[in-house]
Amino acid sequence: MWKENAYSAGFQAAIAAESAHSVEKESEAHKMSPYQQINKSWNRWHHSVKQRSWPFYFAAAAKFAEGYCKHAKVYFGNRVLLPTDKTVAAIVMVMNEKDTILQVIEQLQRMPLHEMIFVVNGSTDESFEMIRNQSDATIVHYQRALGHDVGRAIGAKLADSDILLFLDGDFPVMAEQLVPFIDAIERGTDIALNNITPYIGLFSGRDAVTTVKEFLNRSMSRGDLEANSLTAVPHAMRKEAAGMIGYGNLAIPPKAQVIAIEKGLSISAPASVDVITRNRIRARNVGPNNVVSDMIIGDHIEALKAVIDSKGSRLSFPDQIRHRQIIRV
Image (cartoon, rainbow, N blue to C red; front, side, top):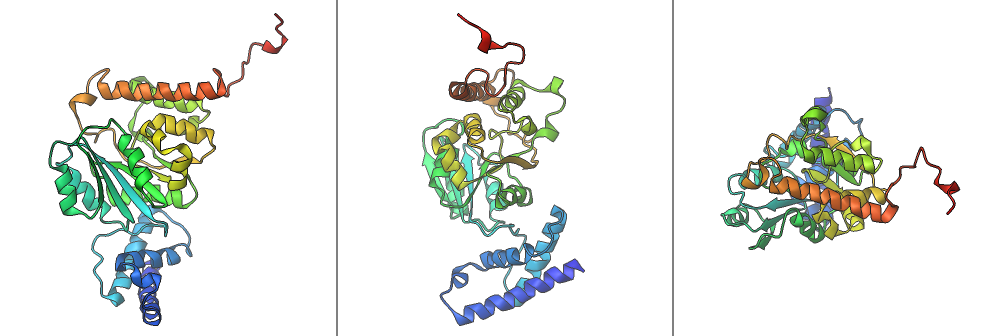
């Protein structure tokens, strides 16, 4: 029954949109692409019905789009509708990703994004040309490598969308897997992290990077976040939240996270994408004490220092066994 309802709602939405266009040719709706108009109409109907599981969401969205396209006579293909009318930017860091970047673009083009921003950071391969030829994205190209995660800060500052979605160009993430992060921001969360907990195993088998991530969260009284961190993509963030944190601080993800916690921003981990086993193997990120892991651990130490400077060496934890206030010199 719900499939018929979704199909009928989409068909009726297309009729209503056509009628609105005929009344006012220069309306906001008229200026939208057919895909954007379908997404707007979908949200109007989707928010009026009870939220169900993600499989239901995608199936209902597909039937709604089918009904809409039946009347509007437009091609929808394998695109995905988003559960928000807010504008969304995908910010992608790229460094020598010619083997994967077209797949990344393909998944992003399945969503009605407001903008795509690729920060090509010190690439020596054909990544820049491939992005330019296969998309109308904004490309920020630096011939010299800026350093790990600096592209996030640059992309966040350049974006003018309501929701920022951060990814890396080294492996594609299915559009369906990205939707829950956007949905979390739509529902009021400031930062939506990737929940890597299902992929990190028992504590005894974790590496130093995973351990320090959880240590930082527990030090900030956010043990509920476990080892989830802005260090891992994909994640999403309100544009206003990025401004509150400070765009420059996004270049050091653990520092950005402690600032967000200190400012009382809401942080959740609404979905899981396996970035552990799929992480691209490079000379810099394999073996014990490799360059990348050392850098990440150093970032966490910098984050801890920043919060200790602000709150004192005990952070928010009281001394349970010493009554220092009675000591007299």
